[in-house]
Image 1: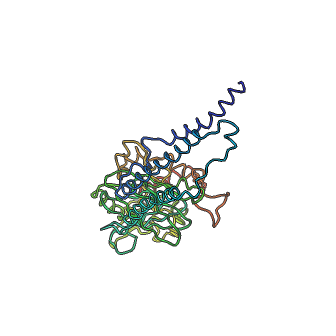
Image 2: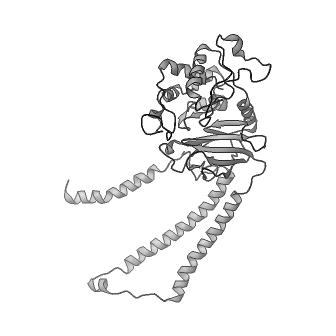
Image 3: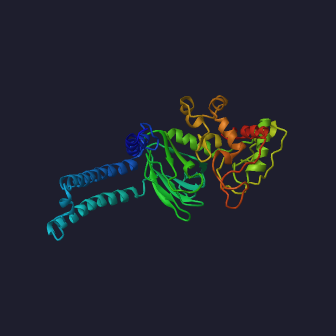
Length: 405
C-alpha cells in the first residue's frame, strides 16, 4: 500500500469508526428507548426534552455555522493577512449585552419549564399502590403494602415488578449496601437508591406489557447485569396475582422434590427464604397434603437466617432470575403469551422452563455472573457461591424449585 493511499485511509478511519458507532446506537425495537415513552411521567419528561433538544440544536447550528462562516470569510490569503491583527470588538456595548442577555433568556425559559416539570413529577400520587424497592448487589427486591398500613410485608418478591395497568404505583426506593439507581425509561426517569435514605418515584403503565430497565449507578462487578423488568397486567390479572403471591406454599410430595427440599433447607436457607416451608400446617386444623402421602416428616423449624437475598416463596411465578440477567421462562412467543401463569401447569413448565440456565446457575453461579473476587467467601463477598453440587443434587433442587408456584 503506497504512502498517499495509506494516509487517506488513516484520515478516513475516524470518520468510518464514528459512522459505525452511530449506526450501532440505532435500533427500531430497543427495549430501553427513552424516546418512546409510555407512562404519563415519562411523557412529561419527553415533552420537556424535545423542545430543549430543539433549542440546543438551533444554538449548535448557529454557533458552529457562524464559526465556519467566519473561518472561511476571514481566512488569511497571504502572509500579510496572517500577521495582521484583526479589528477588536471589546467594549462594544450592544454586542456584549446581546450575547449575554440572549443565552441567559434561553436558559431562563428552559429552567422555568424544567423546574415546573420536576415539581409536577414530585407530587404525591392519588390512590397509589405502594411498593418498597430495595437495591442490592446485584438485584432488586420489591415489597408491597397492599393494605396501606405502612408495612411492606404482604408480598415480597424479586426481579419482576408486577403492577396493574392504569394505576399509580408509588415506589419507595432504598439500598441495602451501595448506591444504585432504578430506571425504567419508558415509565419515568431514574431515581437513586442510597443507603440510609428513601427516595420516592411514581410510575404508571397505561397498557399491559413488559418494560425493561437498568441500574444506572455503577455499583460493583455486576452493575451492568443488574436489570429491571416491570410487568404491567390488567387489574383483574393483578388481583389474581396478589392472591396467589399471598397464598401459602405446601411442602412437596414428589420424592425427588423432597430431596431437593432437604438440600435447600441445609444449604440455601442461610441466605434465601421460602415463607411457610417450616410450617407444614400454616392454618390451625389444616393438614398439609404432604403429611399423609410422604414418609418424610418435615421439621417444624428450619434455620432460615438472613432473608437478605431473593425471597423464593413463589419463585416460579417470575420470568427472570439472578438479578433478571437470565430468563426463567423461555423468551419465546408461545411462552411469553402464557404471562404470569406460565408455570401453573406441568405442560407449561415442560415447554417454557429455561432449565439449562437454571441448572448452570446452580452448578456454578460465579461462572454465570461476576459476583465476588477470590475463591472463597468473605464478609465483603456478594452473590451466590459455588456449592459444588452434584448433577443429581441439581436435578433434585430444580424439582423442588418447580413446586414454588
